[in-house]
Length: 401
Picture 1 (cartoon, rainbow, N blue to C red):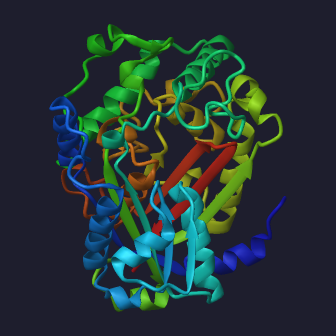
Picture 2: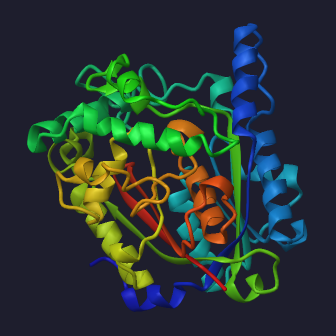
Picture 3: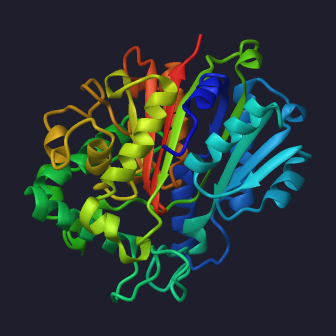
C-alpha cells in the first residue's frame, strides 16, 4: 500500500485554507507583452519576487491574519525561500522549497498537523513570460538526463511533443478524435470568459478549433497552455484557529501521491499505460483518506498544461473507464451547471499558467461560494489532480462550517 491510512485519517479535515491571493494575470500578461514588443529588457509589471509579495499581501488580507501569525512558509517557482522571507519580513520555524503546489500543500498540512508550526503561507511567484523562460527545446535541463521532460535521445524535448505522443497513443488504442478533444479547450475557454482575471476571454468556436494550426500533431495551438507572469499565495492553519477568522474555512480532507519513476526516461507510462495506474493509486489514497468517492466530487480541478490532461485524469481517477474520457466530457457534462464542472476559472489553458497554483485558489473560492458568475451552485467538495513529474498527485477539499 505504501501509506498508513489510519494515521492519514487523523490528519483529514484538521487543517484549513483560510486565505488565498493571486496577481492580476491579464494585466501581468499585457505588461510582459508590451515590454517585449517595445524591445525593453526589463520585467513586465513586477519580477518574480514582486509577484510573490503581492500575492502574499492579498492572501494575508483575505485571511484576516497578521504577518506575525505566519510561522511556516513553502515557496514555489524560481524564487528562493531565504530571499522571500527577507522581503516579507518573516522568520519562520518551518519552511520548504519546491515547485508544484500539489507537492508542497500536503507537506504543509502535515507540518501543521504534527505541531511543527501553526500557520503556513505557500507562496509562488514567476515572471516566466517576461524572462523568456522556455519549457523544452534548448531550455531547462536539455543537456542532461535530469528529467525525462527534457532528456531527448528521440530528437525532441518539448512537453508538447510528449503529450502529442500520449494523445496519439490514446487515439490508436481507443479511437478518440481531435474533434472530441476540442471540447476541452472550448469549454475551459467558456469558463474563462466568466473570469475577469483570465488572460484569454475570446470564445473558441468548433470551426476555429478544428482549423487551428498544429504545434505538435495531433495537438493544436488551443491545446497548449499559456506562459504568463503571475503570483499566488495560499495560507493554511488549524481547523480550530480557522473558526475565529472571517472567511468560510476550506478543509484539506485528503491527498495522494504515487510515482512511476522506474522507466520514466523511456516514457513507458506515457506510451502504454497513459498514467492510469499511478492516477488510480493516487486517487485511491486521497479518496480513502477523505472517505469520499468520485460520486462525492462536486467540482474538479485538473492540471491542464495541455488539453489531453483532463480526459486522461478523469479516466485514471475512475470517473469513467479507460478510453472513455473524451466521450465522458461531451454534451456539457464538464461545464458549469453540468454533472462535473471542471477548471471553472479557465485553468492554465485560458486563465494563466501558474503550474497549478491557480487551480488551488479556484477550488477555495468555489467552496467559499465566492466565484461570482462562474459559481458552481451549492458545491461542497472539490478535487484537484495532476499527472506528470514521474507520477500522480491529488488533493481533496471540503467546505467547512
